[in-house]
Structure formats: C-alpha cells, structure tokens
Image (cartoon, rainbow, N blue to C red; front, side, top):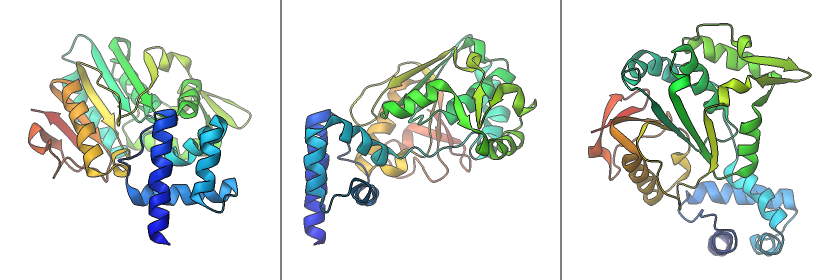
Length: 271
C-alpha cells in the first residue's frame, strides 16, 4: 500500500509540474505526503489518483490544492531575538549603503514583510530600500498586498515586536476595523510583490539582504542547494542571508561560501 501511495504521489507531483509549471518534485517527501493526505480528506477523494484527475481537469481545484501544498504559516516578528539581532548587528552595516535591496523569499501572507518594513522605518532605512517579497502562492501574495491581519493575533504580534526592540506603540502601525488590523499602506510603498519559485526561477541581483525563513525545511537536499545557489548569486559582496530557526547552511554545498555572523539567530554573510 505504501509503495502504491508513493507512486501516486510522484505521479500527482509530476502532473502538477507538467500542467501548471509548479515544481514540488524536490520538496520533502514526508511533508508532501502529509499535505496530500490532508487535501484528500478535504476534497473527499478516496485515492490520490482521484485527486490527480480532478486537479488535471479543473484549474480551480489545483488552486485549492496549492493552499494545502504551501500552507501559509507565519507571524509578525517571529523569533523576536532574530529581529533584535538584525537591529543591533546588521542595521549598522546596512546604514553604510546609499540604497538597499532586500529579498524576502517565501513571504507567505506578508507578516515578515511588514515586520521588516517596520524595523527599517524605525531605523531610518525604509525610504532608501526596495523590498522584493516573493512566493509561489498567488492567494498568499494577494493577502500580503492587502496588509490586513486578524486582530486576534495582534496581541502576540505586539509582544513579539516589543521583544524585538520595537521603539513605538505597535498600534501606531495599523488601524483596527471590525475584527481586523489594517496596516499602514506606506509600509509597502517600496515593496514589490512577485510570484517566484525557488525550484524553477532565477535571481534578484545585487541584493544586500535575503530573508528565507522556515521555507527550506520543506525542501530536500537538492532543492536546498539550488536555493542556496540562488541566494549566493543574488547577494552583493558581504551580503546577509537570514534563515529560520531550524535551518542551517551546514552540510550544504554552500557552507564554505558563507560565514555565520550570528549562528543562533541564523544570520550569515556571504564571503
């Protein structure tokens, strides 16, 4: 049974790639299997083959399945010590550049984008920064562009912001309306939201900082190496790479191309 399941999943992922050009072939097998089984229950499909048939013949079903395969999970100022380290150790170096390019890869629904924009504004750098915010999920990107988040999460976000060295009242950055917090649109004036796949697409050149946090844990080793290659090629001399708390450059093909500036916070610099 397990062998049949593995075959069906491979066929589904190959079909998605051939029909829609979304490449999940080098994503972690365990992660994909878990997400596909969850989707099968939601779509009321008894087999993966039945799910594949629906996906191939109905683009709206594929778009629904994409929400399961990418599962946007994020929060503002996630791992506050990471953002505090950026303020204290990275910002002083970023100040030395006349203009900045930052790439947030796998930006999901935008929580990290707004966190970075708030930090840069408080440090006087936002006006001279271009931020590229990319993801493969168009629905997530649409949500990120709106900058509207549930009020029920704002208390946790506020605590994160304060622990990350926030300099103002967090409520200064949003307007509460009904059950939502609508973030100041000026925070995204210098943000370009774009569809981008680390599995198939190319680089953003001469970036000073790349943040790709809690994305690579879903990739196998080959795809992780491809992503690290993109980041290495994209970064300017001595540019910064930020990873998630469970991610590392160790044991990758690019471990010797970077040095750990702050290893516990997963902040690296290109050599």
